[in-house]
Length: 207
Image 1 (cartoon, rainbow, N blue to C red):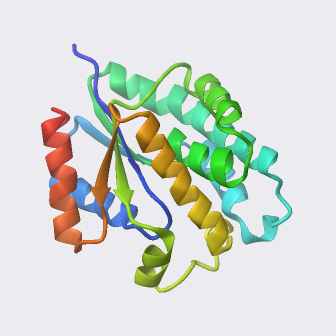
Image 2: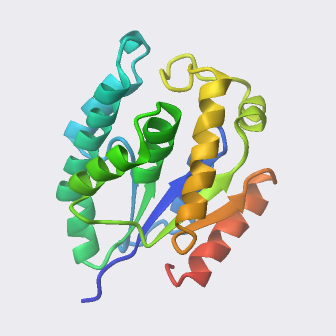
């Protein structure tokens, strides 16, 4: 049995990741060889960690605590769900993965790319995506389109300066890993962006 493909969908807040993932779910509904996940989350343990990370009442959380929680949730997801699925030949599509941590905590929080990449390597036990779709839209346009930040999400409540650093982080990641990261302009309508995402997956032989 051939190993499954691992796809990640990335982007800043409000770029339409969730919408695009939902469209992919509809496109591949009923297929047992495609699994959709989100980060942090995807297992009972990881979902509980997600609740701690995003809770607006945890405003005092430091960047180091934050990145370690993300890494813990990821380690559980990789070990319990992603690797076994890939070994069964299943294509895994994940809403966020290591690039989010690198952009948000490595660049925007200032913890450093080397530190975050080391933690991610440990959490993933060497697993890397086959292709990453980066939905490219700057934060100002993204938040304007979604009607502002979600008041129940601690990270969305960070200021625009923070989200601008996240965006610049993503651009640096795309430049560093051009063979893996494909930038898809996310300023078009939902159908246009979906077509672009599907084109990427088809060109890379994913689906």
